[in-house]
Amino acid sequence: MRKIVPEVIERYCTENTTPESPLLRELVAETYARTAFPEMQVGHLEGALLRMLVRLIRAKRVLELGTFTGYSSLVMAEGLPEDGKLITCDIDPQVTEIAKKYWSRSPHGKKIELRLGYALETLKTIEGPFDLVFIDADKENYVNYWESCMPKTRSGGLLVVDNVLWSGDVLDPKDRTDRAIAEFNRHVRNDKRVEIVMLPVRDGITLAWKF
Ligand SMILES: C[S@@+](CC[C@H](N)C(=O)[O-])C[C@H]1O[C@@H](n2cnc3c(N)ncnc32)[C@H](O)[C@@H]1O
Image (cartoon, rainbow, N blue to C red; front, top):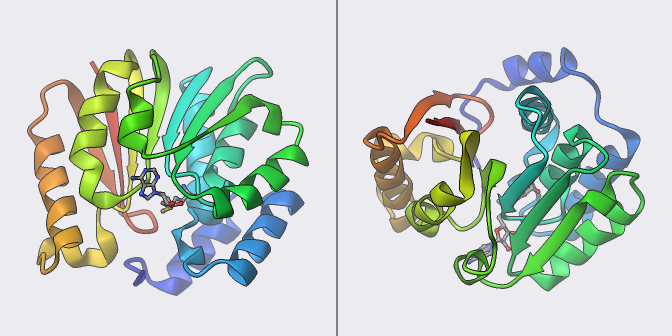
């Protein structure tokens, strides 16, 4: 992933954001040591934004597509109340073993439930309504995820979508993934069920508020 925000600016923003817990810092270190694409992790700045959104809308039920080593799940769970619940979906049993290890060490881990399998299939078994949905799995399926998650999101709820700028490549799409994200952004822009804002945070995030 190429940075779209100058590194010095991103560092300054991160320094002026509430620090990560020591456990999240440890999870980042293990993800960098043990996985091939550690930068898939949302990390400190975007993680803090996700937790803030969970708090702001007083979310109690969160759905996530794309668990990886569990950073975004754990940071959102930190923002949930004691009786809150987060369901997270992934296909990879290996990376999610790392996730489970860290969740079990956090008082917020008990709020998280992992569903292993192809997210589109898993989604058929999950009932809404959710207060917040975070979409961060395979990019080629973003439109399918959007359509599947929309009826599961409550009115007044949020859909949050990661990597919508894809290192800036969406502006001049060349490969399948670039085109899938560009098509997804067009799809969302024309969706009258939501009000949206695209933020140049990390790799680009779309926030969609459902009417
Ligand atoms: C960008 S990573 C998620 C990062 C995570 N949100 C975090 O902050 O650590 C994308 C994840 O989607 C998963 N994935 C890819 N295709 C999938 C599919 N069809 N169904 C479910 N998960 C999938 C991958 O295994 C990977 O762990």
